[in-house]
Image (cartoon, one colour):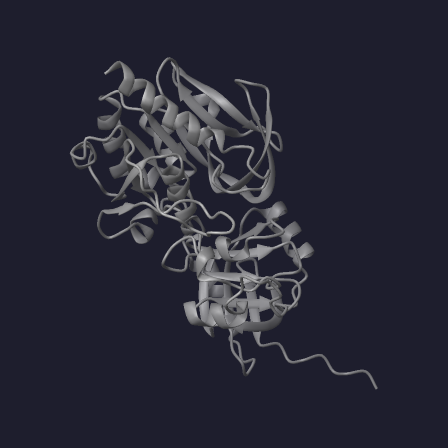
Amino acid sequence: MPHAAPRPTACLALADGTLFYGQGFGATGETVAELVFNTAMTGYQEIVTDPSYAGQVVTFTFPHIGNTGVTPEDDETGQPAAAGVVVKWDPTEPSNWRATGDLRAWLAKIGRIGIGGIDTRRLTRAIRQQGAPHVALAHDPEGKFDIEALVAKARAWKGLVGLDLAKDVTCAQSYAWDEKRWAWPEGYTKRETPGPKVVAVDFGAKRNILRCLASTGCDVVVLPATATAEEVLAHDPAGVFLSNGPGDPAATGEYAVPMIKGVLERDLPLFGICLGHQMLALALGAETRKMNHGHHGANHPVKDLTTGKVEITSMNHGFTVDADTLPEGVVETHVSLFDGTNCGIAIKGRPVFSVQYHPEASPGPQDSYYLFDRFVEAIRARQATA
């Protein structure tokens, strides 16, 4: 006789009433968030701990999730970020020399819900067709769910539009950063030689971005997202960096835009990534808008309009800069080859630029790392003429 299917212990309820049942793992309980899909084949731990995923449940289109285990070295922040995860197959046992634990136990430890056994192809198609839906994800080992209540919670959730999440994931106070990128065989090492001071404004900064800044020789000081222009400039920086982060850029811009405008008055080199890119665009007078399902993955082709080069990039954003609203003197430098949306801007004649994608990630594997070098070169050029 065929074996009976195991009783579902997790349920994903979409706001339109669609239900997906599966096997729960990680933490128990319920969470309400926006549902997105990510196409990356590796890096699930970095994705779950990327602050840009705050307020989102992530569906992984790649089926083998959990096979490399987890390690504290791969956390992108000290606190968990994504609200939950959806996978096709139950997480596999780890098989990697760097692993110090497995995905199931790690998710339980950080309080995040997982659901496996889901038709992620069907779910991804639904996200693409209707836009990133609001969902309620529940995990109960007894398999008892109040379906009407779950759907009602998904429908009642207000979503990310108008929501400032940067203040929830930013650092509580300023700190210095000197850890460099991971390299064989030493692993992570410290920057020891002095370098130009860079103030990094933390809207939800990934650790690997800070490592890239340190690896290019920068003396990095990290400030909270709510820092004012006066607080940034009080450090007498040689350059300013605007980090990635979650939520609606227009909401975060209420306090970030005045800070950026104040910094721009000093004619300092400035570099932004992801939400930092959107913050710079808003400060320059452009507008942002919500995308249908956003860009989330490690295989996104982006064209550098200044060189004609195509980069394979890592992306994670649900809002985009509207290129049609860029003011005079601000040029579009990069575009997505998937849908033509804006992926980079720069001020003509000034060392101020930003990109929508993540050059600190390694999908290309290092197609975009030149941006960090460009930033430091701009800093040193300014110092040489000061």
